[in-house]
Image 1 (cartoon, rainbow, N blue to C red):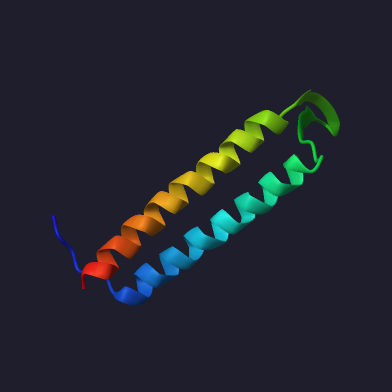
Image 2: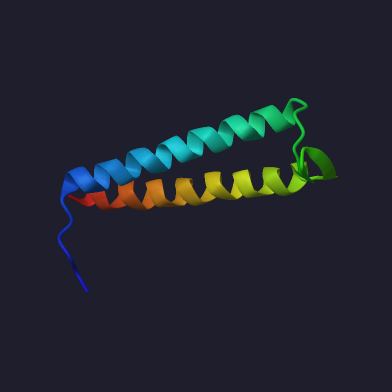
Length: 78
C-alpha cells in the first residue's frame, strides 16, 4: 500500500535515526576505550553487560546505516 508521507516527517525520522546512530557510535567508542556496563539490582552490579551492550550498539549502527542507504537510494532516483 502506497501512502504519501510529508517530506518534513520523513526528515524528522531520518534526523532521529542519525542521532541514534551517533549515540550508538559514542557508546561503542566508550566501551572500546575501557568503559564497562553492569546489570544490577539496588545499585549492586550482578554481572558484566558490556559485551551485550556493545553488540546491541553495533547492531543499531548497522541497521541505521542500512536505512540511511535505502533513503539515499530512493532520493537519488528522484
